Structure formats: C-alpha cells, structure tokens
Length: 284
Image (cartoon, rainbow, N blue to C red; front, side, top):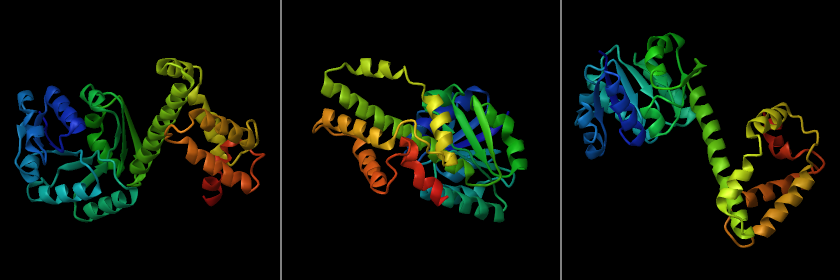
C-alpha cells in the first residue's frame, strides 16, 4: 500500500485524493481552507493541519494549487517533513518560465520534481479519465509512470525540458477558452436571429473541427497561406456577423475583425484567412 499526499483539495484535488483512496492508497490531504479537506474524511483520508504534516511518510506528493506563488509557498512549507525519496508531482497550471526555474532549483536541492498538468475536470479525475502531460527527467518519470497512468486515460511524457508540459497546457487552455468565446458569439448571433440556442449548437456538429485543426493549423504552422478562403472575404463575413449581433456584447469577433483590418492594411488581404497567424510564424 502506497502513502501519498495531496496538497490542494479544491474540486480537482479532492477528486484526485478520493480516487487514490478508492484505489487503496493511504492518503493524507491538506488545504488552506480546512473544510474542503475535511470533506474527504469519509473516504478514509487523513486531513493534515499543515503541508509538512501531510507529506510526512509520503512517497508521492501531488500539488493541485492556484498558481506559481502558491506552489512555491506550499513546497517550502512541506520541506521540513518531506522524505528524501519523495517525488513532487505538480498538476498546477503554471507559467512556463517559472516552472523551468522551479524545476532547476529543486533539482539543485536534491528534490525530485515533475510537472504534470492535466486536461480534466473533477468528474474525469475521479474516474481516471482525461489527459495528463509530464515533463522532467525521464528516469524520474519511469519511477512514477504506472502510478500516474492509474490517474488518467491518456498519459503523455513530453520530454526532459522542464517547462514543456506547462507550455502545452497553455496551448490547450487557449483553445478551450477560444472555443468557448466563439461559442458565446455564435449563441449571440442565434439570439439576434431568433434561433434557439440548441439549434445553433446542433448545426455546428456539421463542422469537422478536428480536420480544421489538422488542415488549417498545419498550413499556418508551415507558413502556407495560399488562399482557399481569402482574408478579405472572411472579413466581409465577420462584418455580417457584427451587424447581425448589433449592440449585443461579443466575446471574440470584434478583436478578430480588428486584427483582420490590420493585416489587410498591411497588404495580406489576398492570402487565406489563416494569415491571422502570419506574424507568429514569421517572428518564429
């Protein structure tokens, strides 16, 4: 039976801790707000008063915290009772630059650390679904690979570059947030047009978004802006969208229109609409 600690028991951390207890691990937990951790007691989880108390005797310490500052603070608070052989597994979404610095600092202090951000919500964490990325020393990853695999459907080792999982987590979250913003604007257009929201969502099922990412995304990454949907024509369509929405608030379309206008003014109007990414490729 493995002893593990979970530092941070918000919705995601609590689900991870509960799932670990149900798999038979001996689990301790700590949270800055004690009542959130105390809710885990019925699952046989020991609630600690401090991070140091929580990690005592743990071979794995899972961090599910708010941001970089809290991660650093909690690690420092846990260190007095952290076992020399313990592995810190940080699931927090963090700034890549600070993640790399943290990994280097901890390595210099002899502390084993892997950054392991996830694409999953609490329900997925409870049922070991979703995806987890891992970045850090390969030998260290191999030590905990089986245990991490038990927490998720898809486990992706990104490599030894310490900040690579952090970077990819931002890629994914950017897409999730971007899709949410565009869905909000589609629903605004539906409202303005007298179309039921569910009907608008159903219509979007006709679009193969995965194919768009594979096709247009690949073209953008390669700097291929040969036109199949000219930027000027796409800008005309965005104008129609803005006019349809009227004075209703929009999440993304006004910014897209402004960026299109900049690119058209720079002479890129005859390129494909995916020229929205032209500066990202040229600057790289």
